[in-house]
Length: 149
Image 1 (cartoon, rainbow, N blue to C red):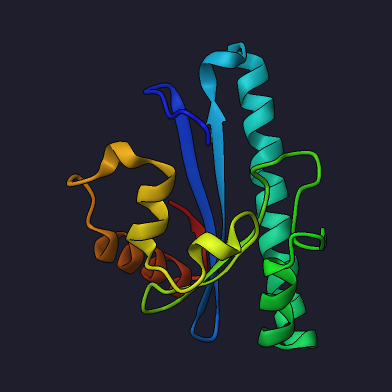
Image 2 (image 1 turned 135 degrees about the horizontal axis):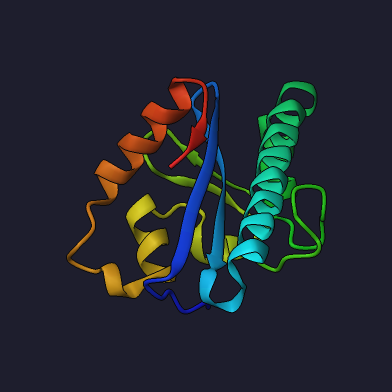
């Protein structure tokens, strides 16, 4: 799993489909790129995240929630992934913070809480994170039309 440094940027694009929060986390190690390249790279990753989240929401409308969640959880399905970025995948949570689909590690995270998922990726946040507050913040942002946190 990636190492998170103080110069890392972690953003989450999220939008709401009924009672399901659809999101994509974007992680960028700023120190690996020069300032101009970092800005361009960040814009590209943000655009891809928004595209994947929007396409997931459209698919839920046309194909149904259960079908889309199954496709996200199917590691052989690339429909909801950035195939150029191993960390470019969609995640879906219920409003109560339960992970419904995880595009990278469904076996580890589906059925777990927001806090469980975050701490598995960033163990340094143990005892510093209130997963319920993070979930509430994400749901509120999504209910307001979506965006970045």
